[in-house]
Image 1 (cartoon, helix red, strand yellow):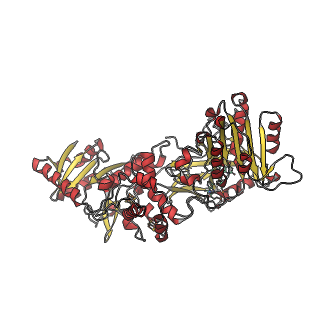
Image 2: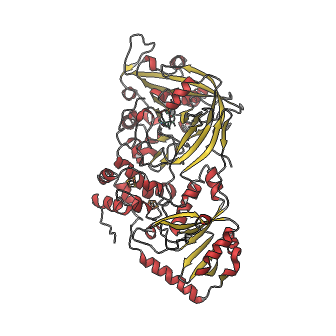
Image 3: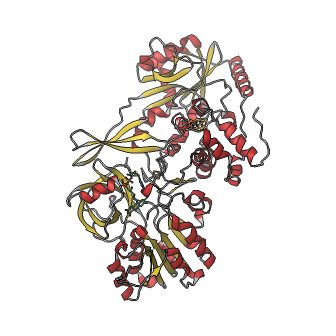
Length: 289
Length: 348
Ligand SMILES: Cc1cc2nc3c(=O)[nH]c(=O)nc-3n(C[C@H](O)[C@H](O)[C@H](O)COP(=O)(O)OP(=O)(O)OC[C@H]3O[C@@H](n4cnc5c(N)ncnc54)[C@H](O)[C@@H]3O)c2cc1C
Ligand code: SF4
Ligand code: SF4
Ligand code: FES
């Protein structure tokens, strides 16, 4: 019987600091079968379960689009036990990896639409995989807009990459920062990403949204998008819960009767209506992004 | 289905004959009013507790143990550990527990069949045992009062004799481990069996109307009652541990002293525990106790119904007797209905 809980072996190829506490990790499978431990190509928005010997296991979004290279990219923030260890491991270290899991963003349903990607902080990580997939087939979509909010310029993820994409004219960029700085190499609105989205002019009926960020940004942003006329069926958000299994067993990630690991992590605002804990209730704690 | 009669005094011989082929586990009264499933071989001076109603832990403990080592890990990777449960016969399962196992079987076979659960489960043959409800049983309300097809062999206690139903090939095999003990069924036996079922049906004193519960709960999501109940709940998780259908677990990595290798364990957990939903940045989605209590009950009678088409409560009453705070599922739902101005549903 195929055992979905068994980690396969991967190797840490490189770690590149993107900000003070966040780095891009590149992993290779020990047997170089392809991206993802099951040898399958993943869909943007899917995640893997990563094990560090003795430190445990945690979910991380795959932050690049599928490619033929047997390398997996994860953008990880140093926040606790397991991630601390990850930041100390020498390259060449072995890691446990399983997945990819989750449903991913429904890119097919975005074809022919205007796309609005809304990222808050680390939410840029999974959205980067969407962005790369969209750019690889750019002519299938209409206007592509990225609204990205972060605390200040040093917290920006993939800045040079995004700015270069913006310069090609294929991507429209809008940034929002909590703390503007004089030497910012980009123009940004002062405020949070919800305000940024509010200021955008959209062809609402023809727009599909992909939203990822800290829980506090969901309720207001989804509500405002709805008021702007974007259909809840076309507003997709990731609901990231604590996860122990990734396959709909351990119960940690449940929201009502849905499992965010298996039925999600991507839900449309329409699907999420009944999932009150997901976002209709006020988040208890302003989690850091 | 074939039916037979088995004399009451022949039950020990039957179990002894079974024990020659497979390890038999039976309910025994370990301490006054404290029943557990235990290997027959270790219950030498304890009689099989034919009168028991609920064991402290449900049969899930055999297939989904409170803690198990899934893998050993070292620098070479994660090595699956094989569960060590030998072929067994589990004797004396009441209908509610057979339904509980049915829920677990289904849950652990959905998209990703669970390796250790199924390897254990496939080792087990199940013998059911009829029962008479007490004041905490409400399987009749939950629709789990009777079973079809979830057992291999089933015994209904008619007093001097058992009315035996053989359902599967495994049941047939067990019958043939002591074929001479099983007698043909007379018409009078059949009548006695049906009379027993009728008496049992009328013996239920606890009723909980559940058919409309998903709808009631859906409408009444905001209800102050949950906070009130939350104030008395210790969040000890006992209700989840004893529940035949609670399946939540944690993963735990334990390093050996060498620091070079270790084991990955799976342990029962509970959505009542404060850390259960703690995410990055110490973010909680159900920080208040009331929210967590509500989550458990919603899962049983609302969420599971939405996701799986039936409630995940079998009406076994274990959580009622296990709760140190005296919180019981019947009054919880009665209070919710009442507090929200719904029509009063009587608990007789
Ligand atoms: C679908 C999904 C995708 C994610 N993608 C990313 C990503 O791309 N980059 C990134 O940096 N982080 C991501 N996270 C968050 C990341 O999983 C947690 O930050 C991580 O578990 C922290 O582990 P830790 O041991 O270092 O933290 P600690 O705070 O020490 O956590 C201890 C333990 O608590 C549990 N835990 C705490 N927070 C979480 C959480 N949010 N999710 C699951 N378990 C948690 C875990 O069991 C963890 O091992 C994602 C989470 C989910 C659910
Ligand atoms: S057994 Fe009772 S006190 Fe303990 S968690 Fe369950 S409801 Fe709360
Ligand atoms: S919720 Fe209570 S009564 Fe229902 S199956 Fe679980 S332990 Fe038994
Ligand atoms: S992570 Fe275990 S059920 Fe979703």
